[in-house]
Amino acid sequence: TGTGTFFTPSTEGGSTGACGDFNEDDAEIVALVSNEFYGDSSSKSDWCGKKVEITVDGKSATATITDMCPECKTGDLDMTKAVFQQLGDLETGELDISWK
Image 1 (cartoon, rainbow, N blue to C red):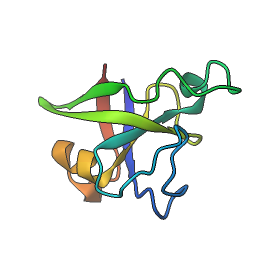
Image 2 (tube, helix red, strand yellow; image 1 turned 135 degrees about the horizontal axis):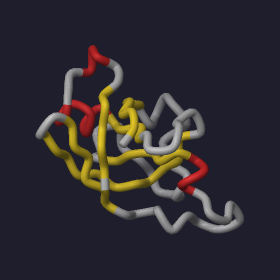
Image 3 (spheres, rainbow, N blue to C red; image 1 turned 60 degrees about the horizontal axis):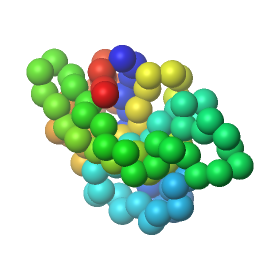
């Protein structure tokens, strides 16, 4: 469990995520907190390309981990707007999430 926020890859961190893939702004992707993302920062994270199911108040969305979120805390996910909007209203800015 944690906090879900949203970002736009092209303007926040760049379109190339930490996994090395080009991230479209409307892709269903998420960024994971950096201490979970990297076990060994000298190599590509084992989290890259893994799918996660995110749940908020009975709604769920599936997204792929392609980036890291240095501002996030353990349990948080930073989602593209395409994912966030499946779970809640952008105007809220944050959501209480659970994911697996």
